[in-house]
Length: 140
Image 1 (cartoon, one colour):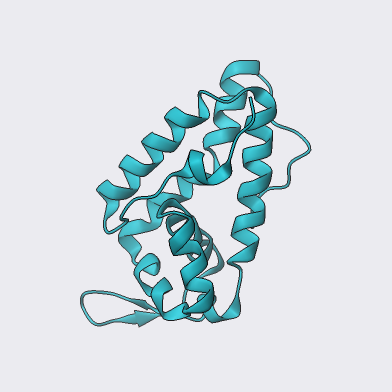
Image 2 (cartoon, one colour):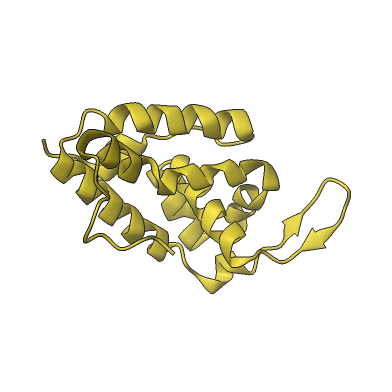
């Protein structure tokens, strides 16, 4: 079955943890409709999209806590923020490239559960085959 990465990801407003969880559930359900080749293709395309967002202008946006404390993003935090951005859809992912300030919403600690996006296709592949997905680089 052919797939379109952005159709599988969908788009929604990502404001808090419940939005992330709802988006992840939707992606997980759409991944179930893909064949094994589609799952591998999704994982590969995920790595490409995350790499496209691997920009210093986005990585340098600080984490601002409600208490007023400000921290730099760690590598992991930045990866999970990029996952949150992708979950919000193609338009958001493209918008932050041209206007990096728009990325600040995704660095919020409450959105870090978007990390799960990294594992959905791999987990579905393992569920069906009992084996690990091979030949696809892990997003960084």
